[in-house]
Structure formats: structure tokens, C-alpha cells
Amino acid sequence: MASVPQSKPYVGVSACLLGERVRYDGDHQYQADLIDALKRHFQLQSFCPEMAAGMGVPRPAIHLVEQAGTIRCVQVDQPEQDMTDSLLHSFEQRFSMFQALDGFVLKSRSPSCGLAATKLTGKLGQYRNGRGLFAVWLQARFPALPLIDENALQSPLKLVNFIQRVETYAFDSKDKESAC
Ligand code: SF4
Image (tube, rainbow, N blue to C red):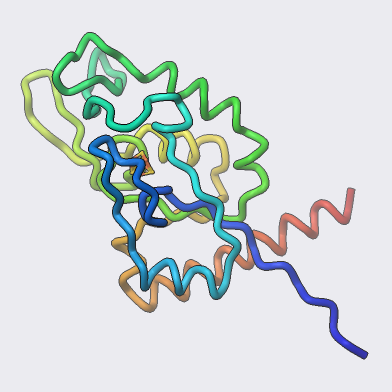
């Protein structure tokens, strides 16, 4: 008897890594080898947090600043233009889309997508590393969702580990659904 094909887990990817020209300057950050490897294991769902919030291309560059103990996402050249609330609102509007995912591959260092090495600017102009606004939101809303950035995936060991984490997450999610 023919075996029933299993659907591949469903993984979100920062759209610029898929070759979409969604960066603020109209460019992309296509990672052909990485995307080919991911496609062998997953169905990929493109998402750009800044485009989803209606920021368009090209758009003014943004960065993260620490203000009164909170992190705000503002335009580099016009700091009074604060994008934080519109970005967060657009993430919440897409909650069910993220709920359907089994993992997410994020673009490193971005003020939206960065997972660890995003530059945060302090009150006195000093820098420290932090996470992008979308990465923070995703981790807060889906604490168990496997996340990684494209830099970490250059390591074959980390790639294998991510694939396993995603498959486990996908299996556990389906298990919960079937128990309902
Ligand atoms: S890093 Fe994130 S916000 Fe920036 S262009 Fe890529 S997908 Fe969009």
C-alpha cells in the first residue's frame, strides 16, 4: 500500500532572505544555499514585519533606541517618527498566521528581525546588542517556537539541530490538535 505523504513543517522566513526586495533600500539579502537547504525540509512562509506594517519600499531607515527603560523603534533621521506601536499592532493582527508556524528563520542584526546582535542605542549614544522588535514579540507570544537567524544556520550542526527542533514542535502541535 502506498504510504500517505506527510506534509512538511511550516517555517516563517524573513522575506529579504528569500530574495524579496523588501529592505529599506529596495535590496534583498538572498541566501540561496540556505534557502535550498530549508526547502528540502520545510514549507516556507515569507514575512517582512516592516512591509506588513505598511512601511513600503524604499523607506527611511529605522533603529532601536532605549528611552525611559523601554525600547522604541524610530527613524534614524527623524527620531520623532516612532514606528513601535504600528509595528506591534500589525504583528498582533497576524497572530493566527504565526500560530500556524512551526519555526522561524530571522535576518540577523535587523531592528525588526534581529535575534541577538541588533544594535540598541542608549541615551548617551552608546550601543549594546539586543533583539529586534519582531523577534522580541515572537518570542514573547510563542515562547516554545524554534527561532534562529541565518548566521547561526551557517553551522551544519546548528542547521540539523534547528530541523530537529522544528520537527518536534510540529509533531507536538499536531498531537495537541488531535487530542482536542
Ligand atoms: S530584515 Fe526583516 S524587516 Fe528587514 S527587510 Fe528583512 S524581513 Fe524586512
